[in-house]
Amino acid sequence: EFIRSVYYNKLEFTRFSSSVGKFVGFTEYGVRNAAAWNNDPSKLSAMKAQKEVYCLNHVPGYYRAALTKS
Image 1 (spheres, rainbow, N blue to C red):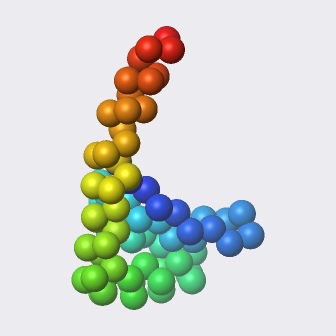
Image 2: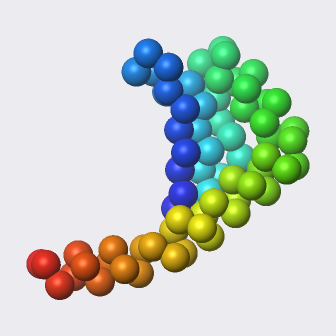
Image 3: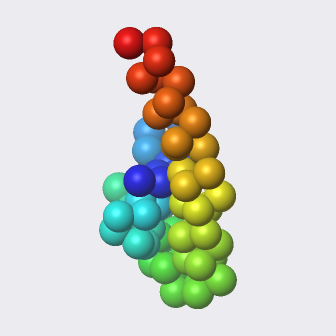
């Protein structure tokens, strides 16, 4: 699962989760940002593509490394 969180003053106000497939806001400001970003198809498709860039290419290597050390 790919998660990108946005924080300000140690407070999470917006999160994108690949399992949900959209941005979710946790504060008033975060809800407004999430609504704006969810209405932008290019922003959503870019975030969904990040799962393939980060997770699908790197997880097998990290998984093997974790198994060999345990």
